[in-house]
Image (cartoon, rainbow, N blue to C red; front, side, top):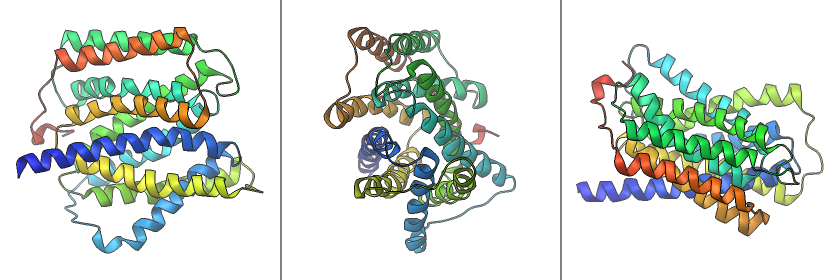
Length: 303
């Protein structure tokens, strides 16, 4: 039974990473026709409708005093600020480069666990983080402005800020997963995201017009398959293994993104960027293989 749970959690996380990798492609395609804030609002709205239709399967709620602050912080980190930064990033950089920046997330989670969860962090992990960070900066500086990435340095910096928000999200989900189902946590993100992005879209961007069927289907895919599917799968897997271990699966996102960007957008990295991407992976691999900090006991998490 334990092996079955482990395999199920692993499969959930791998599939979630594939869906998240495809999201970079979907956003780039949708942004060609629809203003970014309207894309994100549509994504949240479609996801919310799915959760409302499936509400009877919402799972258990074990609310404790003060949880409202953690739930609010989770929603502020992701989807609110995360998607603002990511939308701005993908207007300026390529899906391939943005996907590579996500490779920093596991190491950022480890640093967050050290600061907030009192987990130990080794010198090897610090060295791996530094190496990956150098690779990410090199990747950004080596990028040439083109139709896929008109301002790669600014875009990659914005994607890094999205990863900071993603780090907060992961730590908070781990804290709340024992008391709230993956369904409830994901639904709450969709509901709050819908309410957050509607006024922003109305205020800052014009209503979309002349949207093709491809544009609508892309937003529908982002809302139903990625928002509901990927976040649900990830929250399910994260609730069944330590945060430090689950975060390691994030390393698969750049791989899936590079493959999808090559197949669907005809994006390419130049030779220097390929070497920089290798440096990012080397740093991540160094931190993951040579040091595995223990997961904290449940009573320590964010208390």
